Image (cartoon, rainbow, N blue to C red; front, top):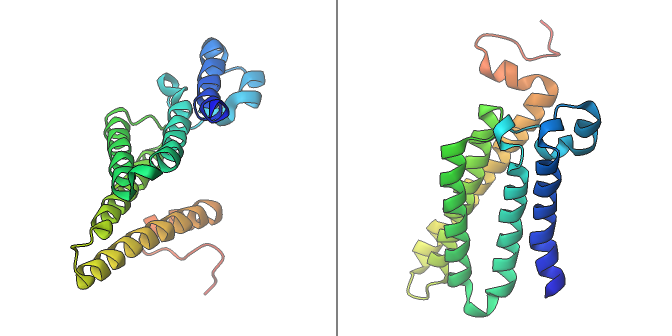
Length: 177
């Protein structure tokens, strides 16, 4: 248990400490080369945000492990509350330098909340079979659409397709008449 606490809380805390202790030097190439992966996608005032993201993910793992004896409903509600607080803070602070990244993070948290709330619904033995099936279809569709959106973003950014998708009347890169 102490090792889990050290891992779950220690790594995010260490990341924030390392960045905080170098906050005045984050623009230097030597610091950016070593620690840039932790802060390069965030605005200057939120250089530490990756630590908060790591902490949130670690807390979700802790919830899954330590609240398992309390049951699926307690796990799902607790995870939903953590994701909801994260979503509210994410939307109010918008820590990423790119709007697309802020939107993606918010969408991720929304899908987590939808999935967890649906899980509580599915765990209720009083829910009818048809309602379970409809909920399952909704959750699978929401997650599948989110994964498809992520794949399109990755392919679009890497292959120039995102620019093409956003423009009207243009041909996709690499096509000929």
